[in-house]
Image 1 (cartoon, rainbow, N blue to C red):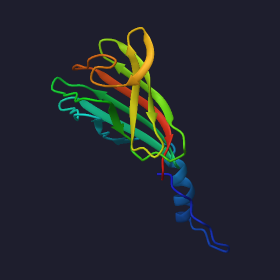
Image 2 (cartoon, helix red, strand yellow; image 1 turned 135 degrees about the horizontal axis):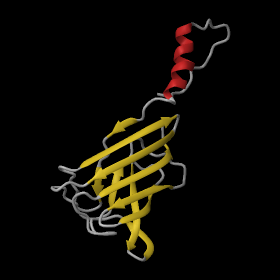
Image 3 (cartoon, helix red, strand yellow; image 1 turned 120 degrees about the vertical axis):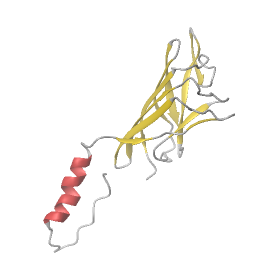
Image 4 (cartoon, rainbow, N blue to C red; image 1 turned 180 degrees about the horizontal axis):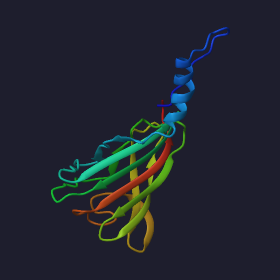
Length: 165
């Protein structure tokens, strides 16, 4: 809930309601529960479809700083599409001239650790994971990189970034 504080006027009489809104409510919002959202999962080629799998996101926003987590579990009828994967952000990233890096993890037949990247002014993030076992180079996550995805595969993303607004 944090928002831009009001501009005070000289000689203004401050009421309890104004103090509550401007100070108490702002402070309490920093300790509130995270806000849930449903990320959109896309690909640069054919679109994937979560179907009977699950995809959930949650975030906490302090001013323009956003802490975010996304968790996706493939189901038995999930289709994986083609191309590089992306997940939508709860807010568009600031155009700060830098890319933001967070953590990515795929739990499939093996556990793969990687990173996520959010480009300036982007509305989504991309996961980068090792190309193959024993190869530390990373590439976009796809239906077959770093392994062929199947039911119960989990994708976990966690990151902090600056929102545009």
